[in-house]
Image 1: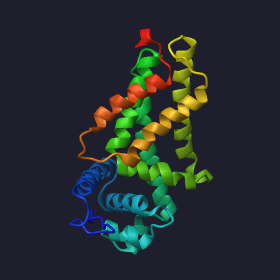
Image 2: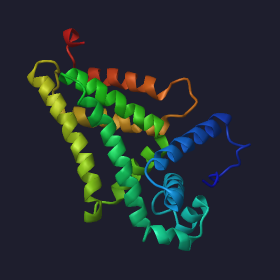
Image 3: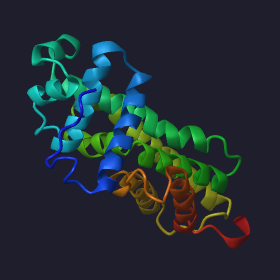
Image 4: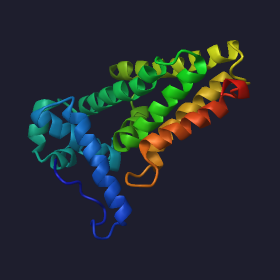
Length: 228
């Protein structure tokens, strides 16, 4: 993948930001290596970085091509439009991110364990994949047409899964929640926001953040002392 241009040169950037970007781009390359091959993978990597840095409307096809190490014409061989390209990124990204919560939560035998496992995995994913998460979470809000229905179905699905867990916990007397809908929003929003501030190479690892956010979710759900 072509080295990502920065507004300032690497020597001018704080070392911590350089380390974060290098690690984050490697995670991104690994993500697409498992899901695409050849030129398509290069385009997906380059486009994800362009959308992160410039936003959907700010990222031109020419810039996407440059970051992919290809010509604009070559990009169109693999993706008919910028929207089709972003849809692929958003869909694959949401399959992975929503799966991080739901697949882990299903391993729990009770609502508290389900909540803790799901949140720990989801927060960890958003830290580990911070570049991809920022791209799909913030830019997808611009795309609510029918061609993105599959993406929004995944988003609604994970929201409903969280609601089911919270309601089950309330029914069993494990959680004490005045407003289940609001608690769901707080928990998911907090996990997603990890991608905005997390920096690779810091003293906090993605896994440790996941555990901390599991504790936060437990508190937000009003888990009773005995249930902990």
